[in-house]
Image (cartoon, rainbow, N blue to C red):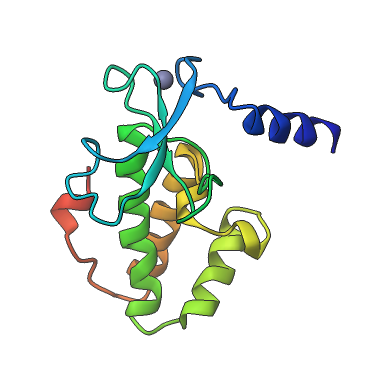
Length: 150
Ligand SMILES: [Zn+2]
């Protein structure tokens, strides 16, 4: 608990550090980072951006980050994990709630933390390979096969 409190306090004092390079983290709007920022999204961005492209958005209207900062590589991996994961319920083998239970079990986390946006590289790869195995075992053709074989 103590460690968590210290992290929360550091966050409040705006002393977040980039998990990739250790540079300070700046809270700013996503103009110039998002192609379209008409929704005026706020981001925590590495001060070395764009040399280091790590960032995380906030919950709308708050300074609370949605998960942990991610660089371009991790963001791409999360998008891929999401595409596989979405097919579990889109293929009709589970409803959305069951799919999120499956995700929680796959990443050994409570339901409250079962979000692809919170996953690091290891668990993204787990979600991808286990979703793939689940779908293949049922003979479901995986969409965007070429795109996702990377
Ligand atoms: Zn950085």
